[in-house]
Image (cartoon, rainbow, N blue to C red; front, side, top):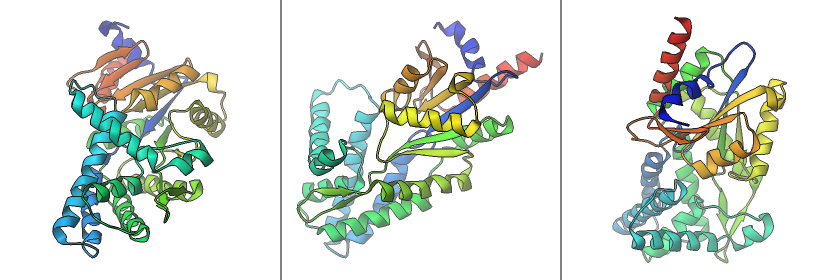
Length: 313
């Protein structure tokens, strides 16, 4: 696809009488500023930790807790870097995170990067502190309470949600598991998919109070993005909910990671197109034949408005 073909591409994201356009939106770091939410919620962890260690050590652990999340986010979003040392450090961190999930891997066949329980355990280790499993789990419970109660929805995402609602376009959310693990006495972590899914659904429901309108949400517990099984489950759920065969739907998938959010849906369904949201990008860009990247949803809204105006003219 060439840049001059972008308007025609965008027109596929507008409904017409004989075609239903469905929007499938990623949540974390796409609709919500999850990185900033994490930094904010980490302060509640510092407060909780201060009852177990000195205030200065608690602050150091909370600071490291923020850092390990940020480092792994670079890996998740596939941000390119020429800093070989930094890349090796992130890879080592990834290995440590997965090393705490041996039993989960054996039972469920999965490991995840962003279990806050594991990230806090690593932060505690890196700061030379001590924290029993029961206390660590309690700290992370408080962290997630804060995350649920104080979502940072990107203003452009809320505006875009209103735009879709004004056209009665079906909107669904897809989101990875929050990996609500519980640390055991042996240093490994246990996983209850139903409990983890239930906890994240509370976060999704609260988004409606902050400007995000949607029909239903699909949560990656236990099967998660970017697996084909997860997206086949999502597509069948959408088809069933709309009482329409998948082949009759045009699905627009939007997310912050090509690998996790967009690649598999495009492979499954030929009528799917992708929007890669790269915050702070200055212009709309062509990523691939069926993928555009934008810096925010306002860019997309403006293009849709222009095309609609031309159609009415």
